[in-house]
Image (tube, rainbow over all chains, first blue to last red; front, side, top):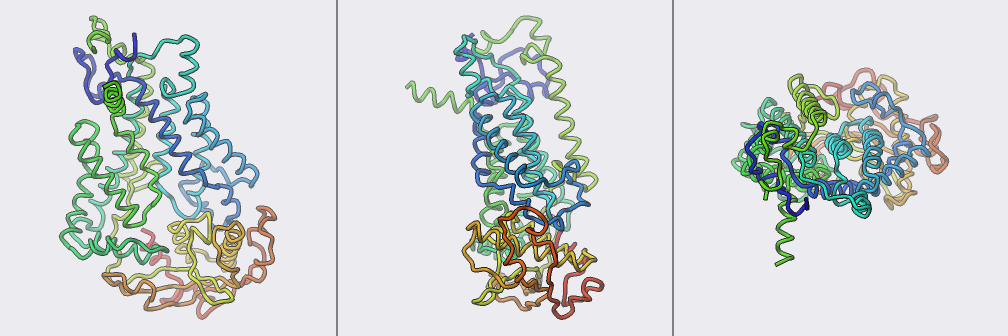
Length: 310
Length: 226
C-alpha cells in the first residue's frame, strides 16, 4: 500500500462506518506518519536552538543558600552535582536533542533527552523560583519517546527504506501523541483561567491595567510603551481581561471543534505573544513550539505537494 | 481513497484496534497517560497546590497593590559610582524573576550569616559573569541592596526616580575580587567563606524584628511573591 494512497488527515474524519467512539476518534483516528515525524524534527530542533547557549554548569557556581530545600519541586532529592558532571550531562543532552531531531536512533535519543532534560531543565527550578514552561516541553518529549515518531522525516526511516522496508500505513499511532500534547496544553490554560476566575477579582477590577504598568517598574530592562497606552483605556483592559479568562477556560473545546480550534488557539497564541513582548514574560517564548502541534501538517504537506506538482 | 485503503470488513467495523491500527495494550497506555494528565492538573487546580510539572498556573490571578510599589534591587559600587545591576547580565544564570524572588525571601533567613553568604555569592556571580564576557561593566567594590518605593504613575514616568531608595545591606567585595573565579566550584570559589557584611541603619535588628524602613516583613514579601 503506497503512502500516497492512504487517507490521512488528522482533521478530516475518515469515511469509515464509525467503529470508533468519540474519545477513540479524538485520540486514535488514523493519520499518516508525516505530521508526527515533521513535528518531532521541528520540536527537537527548536529545543536545540533555544537551549544552544544554555549553560546549566553555571548553576554549580550558585551557593546552596539559594537552594529551596523545602520546595515541593525538589527533583526526587537529586542534588546539584559538580561542574565536570554538569558539563558532561549538558553535552550529552544536546547531542541527544540533535539525534532525536534528525531521527537517528530516535527511541534512544528521545529517551536520553527526556531523562537528562528532567535534570537539566529541572535543576534551575530548585533555585528561588519555579518556572512552568519546562513542564510541558518535557511532557512533549515524553510523548515523542513513547511514540513511533521516527516513521517519517528520520534517518531511521531512510535506513529502513534502503533495506527494502514498506512505507508505514496510516495509524492512530501517529495521532495520539499530537493529541496528548494538545490536551496538556489546554489543561494548562484551563488551570490558568480557573485561577483567574477564582482569584481576587480579575474580571471586574483594574487588575490587568495595573499589570501593564507594574511590569515597567519590575523589569530591569525597558519595555515597549504599547502596554502603557493600553492601560489608559479602562474598557480595553476589561475587554482583554474577560477575553483572557474566556479563551483560557474554553481552551479544551479546541480539541473537539475545528472552528473553536482556530479561534481559541490563535487567541491564546496572541495572548502569549503579548505577554512576551509587552509584559516581558518569557521573552524567548519557549512555548512557541507547542503551538506547532495545532497546525494540520499533513494537510499543509498535501497542499504544498499539489502546488509543486501543478 | 479512504474506503479503498482502510479496513472495511465487518471485523474492522467492530474492532476499534484494527480501525486505528493499534494494539489494545498501546491504547490502554495512552488512556493511562491521558488520565494521569487530567487528574494531575485537576488535582492541583482543585487543591490550589503545585506538583511540578502540574500546576494551577496562578500567575497574574492576584490583585497587585494599586497605589504604591516597592521592590528590592541590587546596585554595584564601582570606581565611577553606583550602577543598577540586571539579573541576566550580571548574575547569570539567574533571571530577573528568580533573583527578585530570592531577594524577597531574605526576611525568612533567621541567621545573618546566611544573608551575607547570599550577597557574597551574588558578588561572585557578578565577577564570574564579567570574566566570561556576559557584561563589560567594571569590577565592583561593593554590592548594595536597596529597597525602592514608588508611587505608581500611569505612564511609568518615574521608573528611574523612586520616591524612596533605602540602603538595606552592603557587602564589600575586597575578598571576593581576589578570588579566582576559574578555580573550581567549591564553596570558597562560590564566595561562601568569611563574608564581610556591612550593616546599614537598622539592618542588624531587621533579621529579628523587621521594621517598615528595612527589609520587608515575611507577610509583605509573601504578598508580592504571590
